[in-house]
Image (cartoon, rainbow, N blue to C red):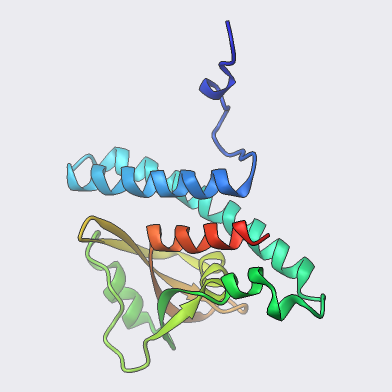
Length: 182
């Protein structure tokens, strides 16, 4: 019968390595974008749910590696540290409930609230912010066929911290660069 295990991967939550999780996240972002643009909302929702599982896996792996290597005196000059410092998103600090209301008001029409405080954020910060995302304060927009994930990040105490936006494909590119530097 041959090798057919790829047809039955169970619930799809297992990844053989971080590169597979990044690739699946990229693919799900593309599927989500196409489904949303075709008004296939149920299928878009399924792709979004799976994408969150991929985000969590990628975050867990890269942060675990970062934590294990940070004690090394040579870490700061490593290719991995350089990859983790690469710009991969933007953030507006000091999130308020009004900001959350703005980003969640219309599905598919999210963006960073206007502010002179918006800054670029590193991959490392973006990973932490996605890890601490508010489960009820997430939205997106499609910008020139690109899926842009917009969400509220919570502080470690659980209060509103910042509003973040990530171009998912660009974020995946930066994660792939970090994975290659492992």
